[in-house]
Image (cartoon, rainbow, N blue to C red; front, side, top):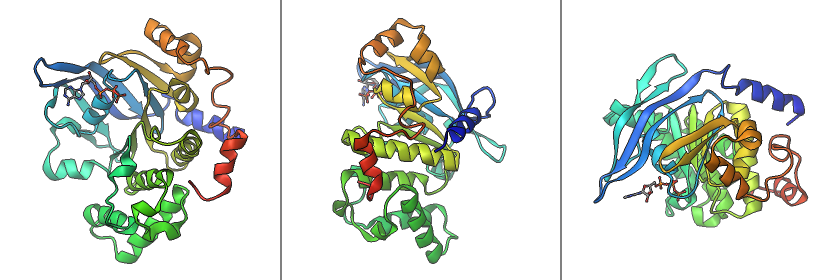
Length: 307
Ligand SMILES: Nc1ncnc2c1ncn2[C@@H]1O[C@H](COP(=O)(O)OP(=O)(O)OP(=O)(O)O)[C@@H](O)[C@H]1O
């Protein structure tokens, strides 16, 4: 990616210029256990088209619960006790996510907003080939697609995520952890979603593989224009890749700003403490992933097939 591309992408993702794709207003989520846990408290945020919004905060602060709530994936005992979530479709329609059910909800998930979660690579079906699993997504959501189109699109998706399309006929156990996670990203991309929620998508992988995959996600975002909510406790990574970062503490968003604001001028004490807890936070953000300036170890992963 050239420096010009980086500048263009930052302008495109500038929240003051871009339209909203997902808006959450006063969302509260509880776990109805004894005593009840208020996991998300009165959270409001707007995700803009094409932007990467990082969600940071220590373990247990409510990041995953919020993400599941935004995509209507909460299961009992979790319950959204109040709030609104609106998806602003690219065709101009607003979808009230909270009131979706049945067919409407099924069509919304994966199609409009898809999710890649921690350890997702282990949720591939072990007895089906990658081809069969991708085919399943298309047959369910795009019933009019012909077989040849489904295969062509599946090959294209593998290529997009940096995996040799000939791997389509592989079974999950024949693939490395990194490749399986790339397959999950391919599946999440299959229906051309406008938002991808990524909950610790690379945490289970080693650092070099993580870097390769994150860079791939950044490239895909540039190319396909989806917005990302990227959840991780890895604040240095978020500073590098995000347009804006929301910091969560005990279920609340306590600070929200551009990555530069968070890095250079954090306001909330908790954000400052979080920054201080990463001694590795040095130098200009974005050197590595945004500009493609790669340390030698990471460069190795792009010279061969994805690991
Ligand atoms: N099934 C459950 N029943 C009761 N409480 C739960 C349940 N799942 C999560 N919680 C509680 O909700 C709060 C938020 O949890 P959540 O998993 O959303 O946090 P998180 O920030 O994503 O943490 P992590 O980074 O460890 O995944 C925590 O206090 C957690 O203990």
